[in-house]
Image (cartoon, rainbow, N blue to C red; front, top):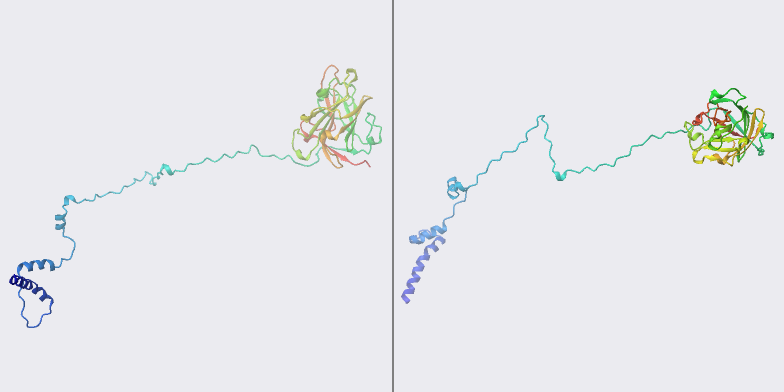
Length: 343
């Protein structure tokens, strides 16, 4: 046993000796150690040989490792071209439906129905001028005109403005008139020439008989250029009545229509005179909605109607202090001024 162990140690020493000799410095003149056997040389040759530098494999090698049948060949993709239109204009892009904005219709703006028109103008009518003088005392309304207040110039009422075919002369129909005022009333004193007095109409028809008419525009400047009646224009009729037919004296308002009707607050008296009659009237300012003052002006016309036919209700003619008088057109009326006491 002892001899066997010594043999094994010697064999192992012989195997390791070449390895130790490779790492020890060689000394000059020393005898080289015997080469190991072929088996060990082969083993060490494999372990100690450095691996070659890795580089690109030759095409042949790639072909060997990855056969051409398994390699994906890229397919050339041709670009999609948009054909130009016939005019050469670029095609209109199509937006996705989801992002097309929904137009919200704008609320329609109502078109103006009309352009406002202004009728504002001067505060004084350009027609004939008349003056009403301020009365310090109220005259007695009896149709006599004997008070000092009525010592005034009289305006002639002789312009034929309706139905000239039935008027013969001034004795048939004409007149004269005076005007006064105070804080409560407009006063009128009229002398009428009418050789055939007939009044067989009442109420809204009283103009179809012998009667008086007052036209007054209470706000001239507001609608100076308006050639039609409005809410500030008044038409008042006064009938002396007719005793033979039991027609009582009365006053009737036609315009404004909203307050049309008999006017018992209008006080007057009529008396017979040669070739006609006289009428004295006081009209409350409140009927016209007026707060009177010196220097005020109003559109104005005073007229007289005539009927000579006792058997018919008919307006045969009319005379006025304004030659241009037209009922439905206040621009054709004259001007009435409220003045102070007569000097």
